[in-house]
Every structure is written in C-alpha cells, then in structure tokens.
Amino acid sequence: MLPIHIFRQNKELVLQGLAKRNFKETELVDKIIAADEHRRKMLVEQEQLAASVNNASKQIGQLMAKGDKEQAEVLKVQVAEHKEKIKEVTLALTTLEAGLHADMVRLPNLPHSSVPAGKTPEDNVVVRQGGVIPELTEQKLPHWDLLEKYQLMDLALGNKITGSGFPVFMGRGAKLQRALIQYFLTFNTDAGYTEYCPPFMVNEESAYGTGQLPDKEGQMYHVTTDGLYLIPTSEVPLTNIYRDVILQENELPVKMTAYSPCFRREAGSYGKDVRGLNRVHQFDKVEIVQLTDPAKSYEALDGMVAHVEKLLQSLELPYRILRLCGGDMGFTSAITYDFEVYSAAQERWLEVSSVSNFETFQANRMKIRHRDENGKTQLVHTLNGSSLALPRIIACLLENNQSAAGIKIPAALQPYFGSNSIA
Image 1 (cartoon, rainbow, N blue to C red):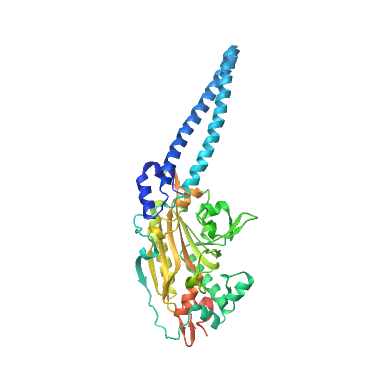
Image 2: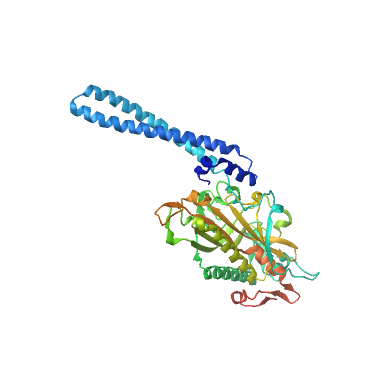
C-alpha cells in the first residue's frame, strides 16, 4: 500500500506512475486526497473537543472546591455535550478511515523510474541472454511425452485423485523433484540465505500483508471454514514472519529461503500454454526473500538477479532476463525482472522466475520497520524471487537434454539425483 504522504506531497508523481502501469481508476487519487484532508480536519476537531473536556473537568474540580456548584453544573452540561460530540466524530472518523483504506488498497505500487512503459509482454525489454539453445533432431519430444515415455509423471492419475492441473510425479520423476529442491536450497543457503520451513496455509492478514488480498483473492484456494488460504508462494509466510517487527540496523539485510508447494487456481488459463507442466494448480518452488535498508535495496535487487542467473547457468539452460514494462508487472511490484528458459522442443521461452523489489509497498501493509543509527524508525524495503519454480525447469531440462540415449542430467545436479542420465 502506498503511504498517504505521497498523495499529499506529490500527486503528479502518483498519477504518472499509475499511467505507466495503465491503471484506469485514477479518480481514486483525488478521492483519497479529499478523504485524507477531511480525516485530518476531523482529527483536529477530535483533539480540540478532548482538550475542552479536559480543561472543563479541571475547572469543575476547582469550582467545586470553591463551593460554586451552579457554575460547575453549567460546565458539566458542556462536558457531557462535548463527550457526545466526540463519540459522533469518532464514529464518523472510523467510517471515513475504513473507506479511505478500502480505496488505497485498490491502487498498485508505483513503478521505478527504470521500468519501461508498455501494456503487454511484447513491451518487456530483454536485458541480456545467456546459454546455448540446443539443436534437436526432428524426433524431439515435448516434455509431456518424455514424462510419459520415461514414466516420470502421470497427469491422468492426478486428475483422478484431485482434478486437472495436479500432477503426480513418481519414481525417477519424484527423485528429480527432490534433487532440484535440495540443490536450490543448498545453492541459496551457501549464498547466505537462512532456510525456513513455513506453514503452507496463511490467514487473511498475512495474505493482505504481501498484497495477495484483495488483488488476487480469485487466484487463491480458500479454506472457508477456517478462513485460511493455501499459499501461492512461500514469499507470503516468509515475509509475514517480520510483520509488526522493528528491526535494528545491524540485523539488515534479512535473507530467507524456503521450499514449499504452491497452489494457484489459474482461473481462465487454457490452450497450449497449459499443456503438461506449462501451467498447473499445484507445483513446487524454492523462494528467496530479503528485507533491506531502503538505501541498499537496489543493490540487493542486482545481487538477487545475479544469484538466480548463476543458478540457471549451473543448470546449463539457455535463458534470458527481461525487465517488465509497467503494464505487465504484478500489483505490488516497483520493478520486476523475469527469467525465461528456452524450451527447445516447444520452441518457445518459458518463465521460470520473477525477481522483484516492492520497496515499501508490502512493508507499509505489514508495518515492518527498522531503527536507523539515529534511532529513527522507517519502513524497510522487501524483495523476493523464485529460485526456482520447478515445473518449467523440469520441462526444459527434459526437452533440452534429450537424445536417443536418454536424458542427460546437468553436472551440478548429478550429486543430488544420483545419476548422470535418465534412460
């Protein structure tokens, strides 16, 4: 959520940022500014009434001590009237603040100045590209056929047990999943991230804190009886560990990593993009999260991008890094870099990671602060990235490394998988 002072101090900056994101409900900005002005006037009125009550109460005591009961009774009536007025103002203020908050949470984060303008993925900017795209024979198979050929996964069985989009990995397929998770976690912890094993369901306050609510409630699975949500990413429970916490300067940066299953309804998805592992409702992912001093968050962002890039290089996969345009970024992000891996059998790029800086947008919702060297508290910046999401990594590993002899396992993964190939 954007801090209210930005609206008061720089309305044009807010409007320009929303325009870059192609956000249409810009009338909310004037509505928020007007509501905030009204709120501040009501706060002044509330304080003045409270001061009048306090002063009159002191005078009543003094008058009673002097025996001037008549004048004391006059002031008592005044105090009663002011107290009733305070109740009215407080109730009106509560209603006003609830409406103001409801409007503010509808606004997305403002994009960083380096974010390109644009509306669709076609407007994203390729920052750099690495790795070698393999040349496969005409007998190349897409990953869904390879999964079936080597008996690594059964989509039909998942459909039987749960429904479409819930794959069942088995045998070497399950082992490959486990190997990737272990490798990713080790790669992250070796880089200074502390490993967590968080809950896989969160309450409404946690989902609100990271921006899933109210923006993405239709994409999350909701356990209605208990009011809990299955997590779409471990970013949600990890970041909420520090909700309502004031960190000391020497505790920053906070670096966390976790494996979790992820659950996404993916409502409206259809066609070739959902074939095989391209888009599923349950998948495994390893995440990295940082909480940083605002002055150092873009240095941290560059470090996280480099970290994910090294991870992809170690898997020997062809990749490219894109800076997302304003219209393609997530609701909470100030800047996002997407990583895509080339699927040689499908002959297309597949997103496997997003690394984002949210600046104070999430921290403002969760009241995650730090105390600087002068003792002043301020909001931290929050960042997160996929490191990595498994489904499309597995798809590209299988497709890009296939041959008549089987599927080659990258050298970095072999100690975790226990073999150099799947044959």
